[in-house]
Length: 312
Image (cartoon, rainbow, N blue to C red; front, side, top):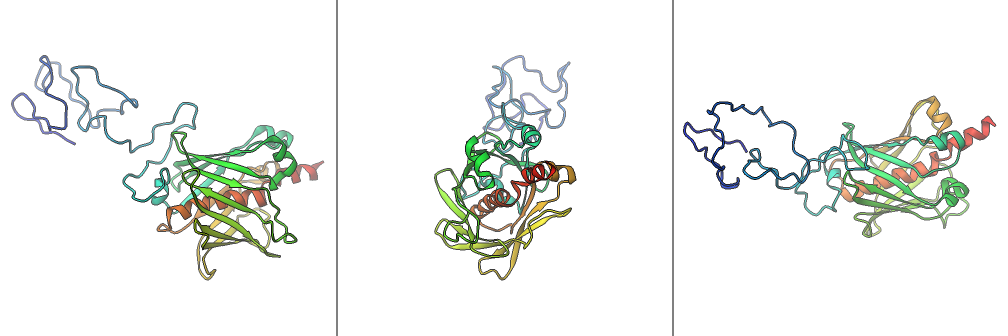
């Protein structure tokens, strides 16, 4: 809030500000006073308290935090999206999804996995269309299942915000993806906050093109996902269409983006793009993010192992 300078001292202050300054405060007309620049420089560190007798800048340091900090200790560095405020009936941490209709998912390159083929826990950065970070995702699985079960392995996925709070939890149980076993197909359960299921992604039985049903917490099919006949990424994107519940209208897509010849040949680190309607329920947007991780695990996780085998 801006304040108006009066011709005589003291300067009037709004009742929301601290009491009048102690004697000795230099007025704007006093010798040696330096006019502050616009914006008063960078904001103080989180939790900063001004020394006794000094004023905070107009607007104060208090109130709710609306901007993400540069990055918490031990967390990913800055460039995070600002958190929208005042979103009613929204699970905590999903406020980011109310303002976007596109997500970019980038998998972190694991050097050990690229050189040896030893499967490590996957890590992802989730960004908006402006390149600002929205979430950080980390797989939680054990070494035995990763290297014995491969892309069919069960795992949990923790999705964190910039404050390292877990805002989404994904659970993938052990199952198969063969059309010969229609009773035990792939699925992904999405909880927000952890412990509260908001929806599921369930593979449907099909012979040629992979299909999935996207359901809400009540088990109703809200959206469908239809994959291509060929899911091999050959110098181009692989698109999975997001359809309406009855399958008549395409409302978005999940695309595995071509990331370059070397990365595609020797690693299984992938880039994905997710688009959905802006007015889609925020819980279903979270479920679509879970669908992206399920598709990655099912169709693109074993690329590096297959290429290494062909080289050998």
